[in-house]
Image (cartoon, rainbow, N blue to C red; front, top):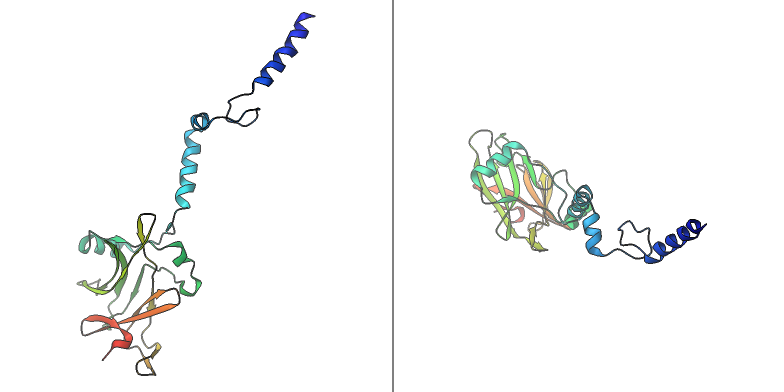
Length: 208
């Protein structure tokens, strides 16, 4: 009979003591140190990956291998620009791949690239003309990068303006057709169109 009396008493005593277990099934909350110790490696990896996905600029856009090699050879100190999430959420500026475009920028029927890269604290837009033959690097424009959480991001998207597109020239107050493909740089609801003239890129409305 004593065994039957003692056993319930022991159970009651154990229950009243609470527990430091991290599974949350006992009376007293576990300490943060104990929770940290009981979270296994796989769980930590999952938490870390979720945290990384939640960081700014995690939407990635791959570049063609040819363009990647050109950047490694010609601009080894730059890195491919990363867009802010806000820039990517701008539906009016949404394009297929906002980091680069391919077109006929100099009008000689040979394909060209334009790409945006981060160099120091600026976003540089570069063109590689005739990249299938003898690539010629030409600077298109430079813009300040946006700094967030200690990192620098682009708020711009690149979009091809096809040859023969009808474009309004605000300075001349008239519509004209593009003689070659152009580079549209989009930010929020603002667009700046660059075209190649005399070996350099200039804004469309600055043409002579």
